[in-house]
Structure formats: C-alpha cells, structure tokens
Amino acid sequence: MPRFYVSAPHPENDLLTIGGNEARHIRQVLRLRTGDEIIVFDGSGKEYEGTIVEEGPTSVLVSIRNVFPPKKEFRLEITLAQSLLKGEKMDYVIQKATELGVRKIIPFFSSRSIPFLDRSKRLERHRRWERIAIEASKQCGRRFIPKIEAVQDYHSMLSQAFRSSLPLILWEKEGKRLKEILKGSKNKKDVFSIVGPEGGLSPEEVETSKTMGFVSVNMGERILRAETSSLCLISILQYEWGDIG
Image: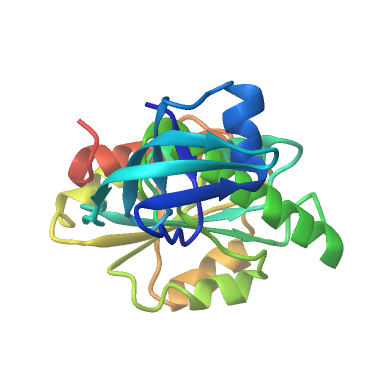
C-alpha cells in the first residue's frame, strides 16, 4: 500500500486532507484515484490507513478507517555524526542511514572537509537532506523519520554526545577493533558514532574526542571510503544488537 508523509495530521470526522507535494505525488505521479487505499504517516510513529474519497485540483481527501499509535522502533538508538562529503555522497549516506534505522544524523565540518558551505547553502542542503530522509522512510516502511541536525562545527557536534552510553569515533590509524568493543557493550542502549570526511580526521580532532570520552575504532586492515565506513558501521551495530538479522 503506498505511503505518504503528512506532518502533524489532524483528521476531522475521520477525514484527512492531503495537500502540497504529497497530493501531487498521489495524483500526478502514482495516478491514484478515488477508492484507492493509502497509508499516511506523521514521522513520529503514528500511521493512518484510509481510502481516497475525493480529488481536488491541489488536494486529496482521505477517509481514515484505522489509526495505529506510535510504538517503540529502536532496539538500539544510533546517532551518526557524519563529516560533510563531496558531491552526492552525503545524500547517499543520509538515504541509506535512514533505511538502516538511525535515530539522528549530525552533519559537521572537520578540518579536512572539502565542501565549505555558506549560510544559504547550508540551509538549502539541510532542506534537501530532510526531503531525502522523508522519501527513504516512505520507501522502507519506517514510521519514524530520523532527525537531521543543522550543519555544525566539530566542537558543537562533540558536545551532543555527553549522554551517550557508547561514543565511538572511526579512525583508520589506530584504535580498538570494533569486534573487541562490541563484546563488552551488549548492555548499551545507544551509540554516538563519528565518521570523518574523505581525507580522514586529523590526529588533533581524534585526541579532542578522546578527552570527552570517545573510543577510537579501527574497522580493519582495509581503508574504506567515508560513505562505506558509515554504512558498514551502522549495519554491524544493527546486526549485533539492533533490528537487523
């Protein structure tokens, strides 16, 4: 059944109006019509199941027959702090991290980040990343949309991890093997993971993170691309004590 996102929906007498891009997608892209069944989700866990009963020029009216309340999605809550990547790599990471079930994504500048975005570009990219997360959630059937934070500097990003039960930073030059860390971490409920840009994090940045309680992690002998490292780490964490496998 096709799924559509509506922020804070408010059905009246079991009728819900869908407008904007989602209405255009329903009518012009999928060409759904009166009598077709759809699911609407609000991004915070609640879903609405209903039938299209009326089509307007810019909106669609849906008769709601079932409302499914939020339920806990996360067995393991993962925050991915990802240094900005070049080109469409950042889009790709956000899309796939959403599919893999991360709770939050924090884009940040590090000393070796190649793209430097001015204020207007940051806002533009942030809106784009939010749309990507919404579309990925629609596609993969997630009830929750991960929170995409505004682009931050390195120190602001680090400060968000002060309550994490397992703060990790990937670094190819040293660190414990992930397998070793996971052996003694099965009781952890959340992970805050930092992944650097294409050129890697600087030794100074890694040392700064360690003073704040982060554990440096080495993924193995092969040097993985930044986007590969992020998705590999998330997949392993979800397999070990998340909701994959």
